[in-house]
Image 1 (cartoon, rainbow, N blue to C red):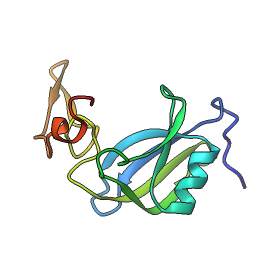
Image 2 (cartoon, rainbow, N blue to C red):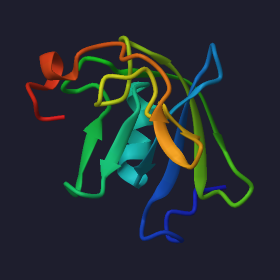
Image 3 (cartoon, rainbow, N blue to C red):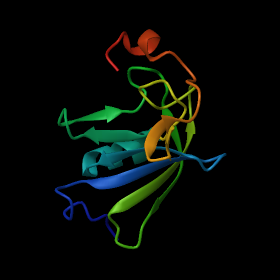
Image 4 (cartoon, one colour):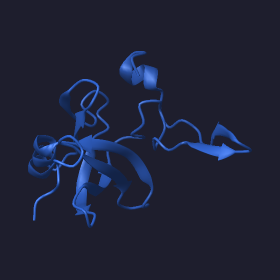
Length: 126
């Protein structure tokens, strides 16, 4: 049984979830090569659609994602990757999760405090 990379131009969606808290941390995309690298190294590696290259989460920040479990959906075109996050957050804007905004009264509101200063990590390139 192989993942269906053909369905979405060579990519599958990867939902990243904290293995301990079950909180969704981020969503990324993987091609076959990045999936293989994730499996081989035990660290989540994505395919950047904008840069057209592989990138290991945390290669700049040090906030890597250690794989604890990988599941796929019934169509074999999406992944759920449970991880242990190394560092205070995974969001390049300085939050624990990329899902830090909530819809309140029809407007998106920041719903939590930053867990780190992204300028200190990325030098204003976040």
